[in-house]
Length: 281
Image (cartoon, rainbow, N blue to C red):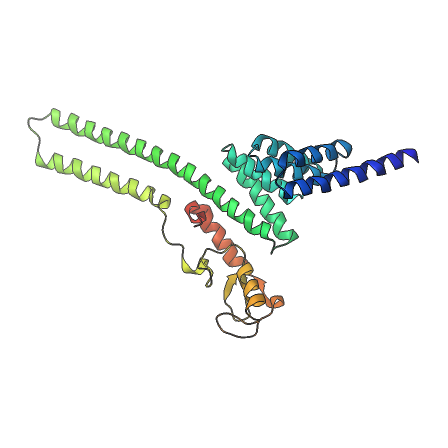
């Protein structure tokens, strides 16, 4: 019985310390908040929220190593903590570990949508995920561009050397040989230009964009009239403007919305191939 009372007392103290930490955090006294959460962790180390709260304070201080440590501990205790996955993803991005960071942000996005699809956190996670995906694409694109340019220069040198050897074995340089070499170099340039095409940003197809925001879909839903919208934007319309379809003006209720999985898959396929489309203004 005494042990139960001690455990109960520790839990109460830890919870009070968490509330104190929250108060300090709101006043932007991050050092004091960290101290309070640390004491709570000492009393009850198996409560995930104490670790994520402290990680948030470290994030405010840009102490990304400690953010990573606390988030990994929180995830060990609760694999479904989308806040822990989210902040871990941010910490990994700061370390330029883009691939692993994106995985954590994607996990956070999935968990956040499941918990509350209309939460402001889901929008925040999406923005960070899009930024991370764009940085990942930019990093790979720069590497790919450099590799293509290096290979192109090597091929051009090989053609020039071939031309030199061919013409050195004959007296004078014939117009035909020069024209053939020019044609080969031009064709080579076309081949490499085509190879670099996917790296060049262009317009996103209209069918992959919401009619209201004109942005690429994130969570598309289709209405009974057959029109697809971004879920969060349409729900805001139904709540703030009225319960009708923005395009057809027909009556529309939230319960009638159906996820447009075909468009969602098409968007993902497009983004997988064209990472530049993740860029947000």
